[in-house]
Figure 1 (tube, rainbow, N blue to C red):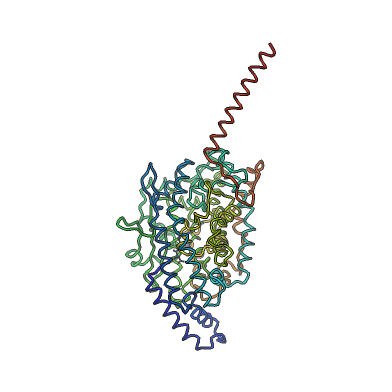
Figure 2: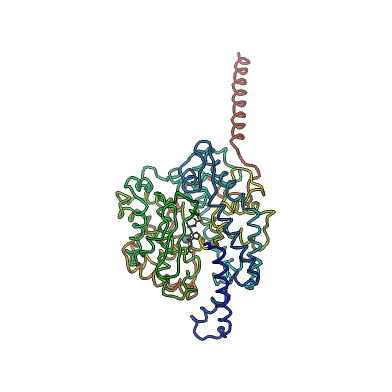
Length: 577
Ligand code: BJ2
Ligand code: ZN
């Protein structure tokens, strides 16, 4: 979240003074654990600890420059004129099924964003690393990871990822098979990777926009929520009211008047803004805001719920001292932001709010639904995992401006099994095409979120007395589930996250099991579908990229073979005679 350089410097001054005052107390020896924790937070001031205010200025200015590049980026297409990321380019990536058009947008966005950030990003990393040393951290990645208060954090997320990988591999193989049918197998490298621009999403992070190409049982029920929303004349305000209604139904507070007055819910026409959706706590117990260039689509409706989930967390911990007004860890804030999505998207709930006419009861429709969910929740896992693998490596110095893009694609190929559809070089800077790199938002929080939200969903559904399978549970209107959730939210960051986890699930660790259980029926089905497939992909990126011209060469070869065959038959015939 960006502030002007002046206010950043003022905040740093304040933090420094507070830290100095707090350190006159022997707080390490405090008997009251909460007070001791609060003092720890007062003295731990991150970048503000530097003795060189030029470093802080540089960090702040560079972040503003980088997000500025991201928010101004435009791609000019012959057929459609010049478009920004939201809504123009996003619409094409979501809806186009033309290999060529998707490629133009995919490459165009990277040329218009990341590519212009290279030098500034290098300086940015340098400045942050220099400043964070004053707080006693070796590098910025180490500082970011410290928020999880778990010495084994890196190993823990790796283990979770490895437990989830088999599910991802089956989903990947199924999607690859169906995409080959759609785009032709000649467009796919032999290494098993899938070209990165075919997923209905600019970063291939969530794939549900291409559900129509992948429907397991076309004859059974599926919902096209975007179409239904348009049919029912949904408008932007209504989308926020629908989200608010869900939270209120489980006993949460309504949005404040200040929320409705101060939020930016539609894209202004008179200036460039950072359209990437976000939620804001102004720390006065009343002024909470969302900034989003909302359009009427299913993706956006889910994002509305996500951002409002952050606001509900803010509302529930507003009574705490400022430094405790945070998530139990950053992954918890994100988990809270997404928890409703698991109930909201069930056919049961879609029926309740009138976006589905009838709740299907057959197993084919159930697989359709689970696949749709997997395209968001399972497809995301390697993406959520790898972004900070890259950044940690950069902060550590293992990756630098001589191999930024190389390492980025190494990770994309290895973990996601996707590959670049055009040649990339160190002129490009593809990490910068994803908001959180210029925006400098750590990303492992989203991986943590996608794991813990299933743990919480399971616990809340138990609390609600749910008798249906986990993936069909909707906690709407259930205040028992809401109360349980609130127990955790109210704690903010005043206790270690393990305590917050225990409040809601009764357990003190992250676990991949609820996610695996949720998708169990789908996993069985996918394995059956993939019986004849070579699942998986090679660890490194393909060395050559199939292109439309290679395809043309391919058909030229076919032409020659057919001609030879015909001639052979012709001569053989005369021979026989
Ligand atoms: C759409 C969503 C972020 C979020 C924004 C931008 C960065 C931080 C905030 C914080 C909230 C807080 C987003 C959604 C899931 C995957 C990820 C993505 N925007 N942020 N101020 N998402 O998390 O809401 O609003 O209080 O910490 O980026 O890659 O799309
Ligand atoms: Zn979020």
